[in-house]
Length: 550
Image: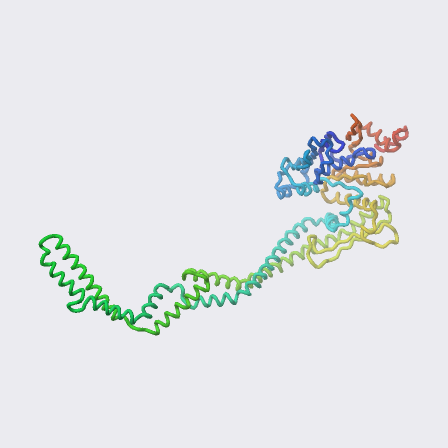
């Protein structure tokens, strides 16, 4: 409920600070006194866009602040989703700066207009003759039916399941798209993998292969050069080894004459031994050397395959080829496993589809059961409100597919006159009739759910005294379950309130100011008497006013 409203520097209001109670609050005042200003200020805290032209003194900041008691609205989750601090006494403040910029705060936390709109719809509902369009909206009509049908828990489960169902459908579509794309590459990936598997890459040593190839490809040259080298080392009397032996003999004769000679002898002896080893190795290599055209052809073929693969895959070594092969094998495996994943998703969708249909059927059956009750209640209330021939037909059909409201289509058909055909509300009801229908619906809803505070803005315009009396009774009845504000020109309604405020204008220093005053019992009698008989109050008007109040 709205517990207080503070307005400063807005339109014709200098400063206003008013406290509100539960029950039914009446707001009256002459035409042009500023009731619309009060609503305009309240609309700002509910998320309406600000305008610098609304500021009374553009050199100062404009402030509108409303305090709401939200203890009974179960809004902790909504506050959390909007990243706002929850407080049972929630304060919404709008500021319009001299620069024209506006700011919004919820419990002293900066907030967006979207956050204001999201929250305020749970706090207060400003209703006028011109704001009945929601009656024609499917979501609102479902809200009415489902309130009577007690479908809250079923719809909460349905919404949760529908979200999961659509998520599964999206996953299935993604898998099918992936499969389609991957199948285009599947055969090529298989071909590339087969190519890479033609060689046992893990056992290949490229350097050894290249060395073997060079040796087999140059057997004659290698044999010739080894023979020449052996001849240089071991030709009799001319070979390097024989000459070193002669040198060794010469040095041996003088080695005892000094350490320098002894050292030279040792070095020559060492070289001789090393050359003997080299000669032995040359002999061995010559013996091992043989021509093998088949081996050469085999190694050459291996090298060609490896080099082609390295070039094809833009790789610099065998290790990179092994990694590429692993990636290709993974892609092939993923493609082959997609069918299993798709089948699994299809089964999940099938199971959830069954569950959704079961919940949707419960929702549908509950709706069907309460439609006659809703029609009966609506027609009874409208009859009291001067529409005795008003008839409703509410059609509920199976759409055959899921929507946010189940699987149903819903249509409220209406006729106000005997003998007339049923038609859509927007085509068959006038503005005044729509206003009374909305009042009837909200009256019924108040019996089944916790509604936000409601402000009726002159919805009694153009109705007779007796009908206005019935309207007042309905609003009074609603105020037993919720906070009701009623802006009215009719004394029959004004007399039914628990609290009465009057909006009026005063002129000071050549400036008009709008003010709001809470009326005591005597002031209330005078106000209602004026509403009955005009400015010149008669004794009969005073007596009638007292009678209405009593």
